[in-house]
Image (cartoon, rainbow, N blue to C red; front, side, top):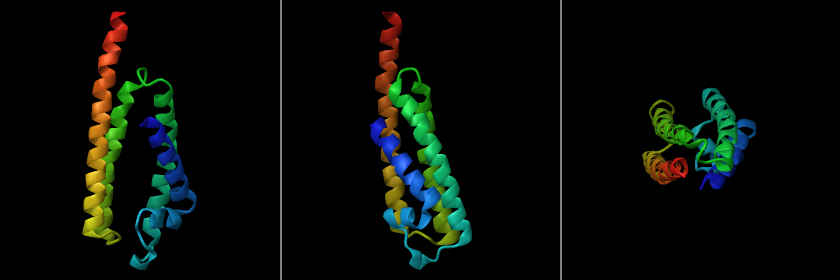
Amino acid sequence: MLAIWVLWHLAFGALSTFWPEVGANAVGWSAEGGWSDPLLAMSTQYGMVMVLLAGMYAFMLLEPLRYLGLIWVAVGEQALGILYAFYIYANMGQITPTQLGVQAAVNVIIMLVFVLLWSGLKGQTGQAKAA
């Protein structure tokens, strides 16, 4: 799971940073809605954050028990992703209600997966300390 997450953040972060229109098209946003300078700037900034998060998730992948608490950063990122999508929908009209709903559903599922991952690994940290 974390390996996929590292690759996703690295790839989509690079697209959003260096080729924001290509990255946006890859997830269903279209230029027909009108690419505004503020939207491109936000996409580029978020892309840089995603590249940094890819590095953090790579550390987690290498030593998951040591960096277990960082899973909450992933959960928070997904929650902020829902708010970010709603902001783009409400203030910029760049996504449809369906796209907003799909993104929110996907983000909630990912949050649940990370919470379950945390729960499973948390049990292992207790076993490691007892040994």
